[in-house]
Each structure stands twice: as C-alpha cells, then as structure tokens.
Image (cartoon, rainbow, N blue to C red; front, side, top):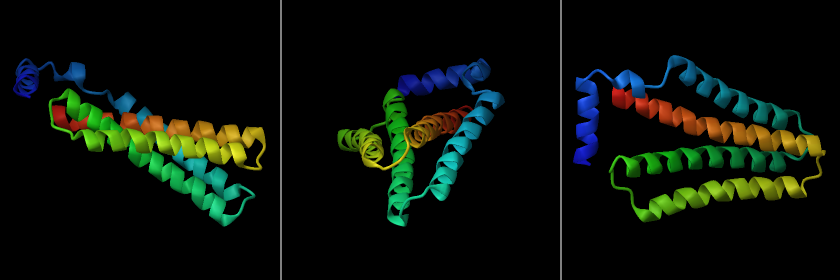
Length: 146
C-alpha cells in the first residue's frame, strides 16, 4: 500500500497525473452509454406486452446487475491499490454479477418474446452494465487524481 501511495505522490509531484486522468470525452461517453443502456432497457420494458410482474423481474435484474458490477469494479480496484478487501465480499460481488447475467439469460430464454426483443434486452443490459463499470472507474480516477 505504501508503494502505491508513493507512486501516486510521485505522479502528482511530477505533474504526470494527466496521463492517468480520464479525458472529458471518455467520461462523457461513459455516462452517455450508461444512460442509453438504462433508458432504452426501461423504455423497452414500458412498451412491452407482458405482465407487470414480468416487467418487475427484468427491471430488478437491471438494478441488481448494475449494483453488482460496480461492486466488482470497486473490489478489483481496491485489491490492485493494496486496499484490503475481504475474500467473502469479493466472492459475493462476482457471484451476484454472474447471477444477474444468468437470471437475465434464463428469463429471456423462457420468455414468450420475439428473438429481436430478446436480443434488444440482452444488448441494452450488457451496454448498461459495461458502461456502469466505466463510469465507476472514471469517477474513482477523477477523485483520486484531483
């Protein structure tokens, strides 16, 4: 941990933090893709011809997946920076991420939807969770290097 702190202090002293700081374009693109993924998924659910409990299932999976991937990203980043992370929390974070993806796959596999609708939900879900990781990384990098 001391080595990591020393590296960051050295970078700050040499004014090389711009090399590690995410660019405004990448930050904006990450937020935009997160918004597009979440909003498109929710609009798809709103317009879907399915029972309200099914819509709730898919919406809950989206929220569960977003929280899970942010937690995984934080754990991975903490470990790489030498910040202690319990193995139990790290394992639970990965388990819940994989569980959310698996639950979406099972739900879509058994849903009475067109293949194009199933693909739409899968792709907007993946876009949302991937961009949530990027937003979390950018937020942490910006705060750390500010």
